Length: 590
Image (cartoon, rainbow, N blue to C red; front, side, top):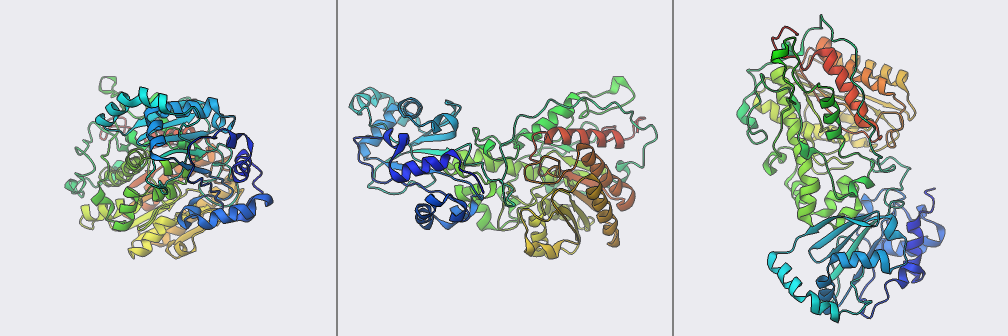
């Protein structure tokens, strides 16, 4: 039921040695090995004529690789190993020469319709829309000089058809000490084709976001409800416990407890577009709120108006901080294994990236998100509320990660907060309204035997992750069916919040506000309107303020629809205006 994308046809050509692709790579150089793997959860998902051939490839593929590829996805890996002299000649000609060969000397249209990478030694080019979009050069200055000096002679010695052939995948293996040329192929039809099952990795790539929403015009209440500021406990936090994740503790007089860093946004030379998650939605939200002037302090005195954004920037969470929740084995794997990062992000083409580049472009942003959530939780206790404009990685747990969630920032924040307050903050009400079950947070509750963490989870019970091992940790579990609309969903959220009152009053409300419940979201399969999300978020803030009477920290979590960032912005705008979150404490506007 997954159709027959163009990459299946390419697979047939490679496996049979026929077609335009094969003829484009005739070479005088001996090919030691061609490795083509098609991955799927089961060969039965593939066309009948490919099943027998593909089964043999799958049998030779590492189980760890097969397990991270979503259903229906065809990920092609082609690797050709050349003898040492031919490889050196190719390196001297340069990666741009190889890209030109792929685009203009071969007859295969795949190179013009796909996002892919070509690697020659330590040099890599990323190609999209028939052009190099980014270039990475990991060679030393000495290597560059040597190549430049040899390039003219090598070009004459290299045969016209002897350009290093494209190759892909994570392993360099095989073959007689020869070098390799690699091209990782992320076919726009194959690598993002999955539409069934429950994985966070399904759905089409996100499209460009709509223009920022216009500023809301409803008036700020003149007689606001009891203020969140009154719920703050500024003397409770030991600020030195956060010196590793914030350069200077933010002053209440010149900052709002919105936590954000530009490093939250993940860009991987276009590869991130192969996943439906908009990994740059965080900056879009900030830009939208800035355009409305809502990230600045608001007062009635124009002379005291502060127009510049007043957000708090976290530092990147250090290695040691992650070990408070995660096992050394997992943290080491994330920092040393491309395969582990691929498993978490569900982006197979990342296998071909040089590890230092993958750490910088993917792992480091996740560490900023984790630090942001830890810092936001502390600011919530100090000021009564805080919003991390990122975070909410609720699928990660102590010894693993999945669904674009690398670190359990929720438990990292809660555990550090308890230490930083000498136990004054103990009981936490965690409300998870992301469309997916928050299995990572639940699993870690069991791991750490945290009975003071009360979990309320309203989610789509028919999609990923369907984690039965996590169920016992969820105090109020509300699995809904696909297709749920505003009325059913908001009624369920309201009842879940009411059910949570049977437990003692919390010291903190932790709200994971995923917008993947939005109608049209390719992964969520709910039909909640933008107005419904706005009502939901306000309902949770009202619960924290009036019922739980506890500070609240909010994280953004998932959201895969193209308009997700605009919906988040509109809801945050409503919260800011409704609760006067950007008013200076003690000012007349309060």
